[in-house]
Length: 209
Image (cartoon, rainbow, N blue to C red):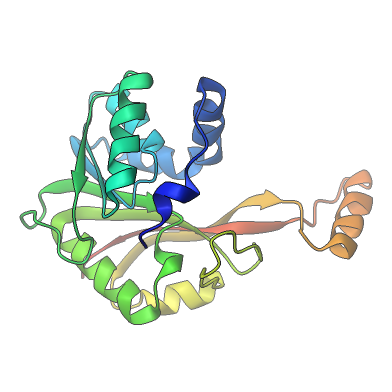
């Protein structure tokens, strides 16, 4: 993953910042409910979620393996008045002590790896943090903007994570289908006050066993 800096090349405005927070409100709330003192976002993108959590007085580290992304994080932390540490490194070998963080989190990260890599990453995340919270597009999402997304059902994710302690897992966030025929049906049924839109994101909170 060495092109994320190019993927996130659009300048983020305050409006974009607030919209992105809204898109991630479910799992951000789950992080906040744990009342963490120290959190780590691995695969942080431009760092918007980390900046927000720093507003709450949480010691926040935004971590990525792309130097360009780290520069973006520093830029946006300054622009949006955050207080975060931007750290360059390898997600498979985090240079932190066991349980050093209360929470490790990310969104739209794990689906870019094969199953063996996913297990290695979750093992490392649950080593250095008490909880790992994440959100990824599920199989109903269908779109692959980066091109290598491995989209799974909730059942497939739960099975993959079965060697860990799954505290919570569910599909979240209903969206309009990208399939035009299905979207027509969704609109029709919504007029009948029946929402058949599919939940297109998978959320989980896990710990080591």
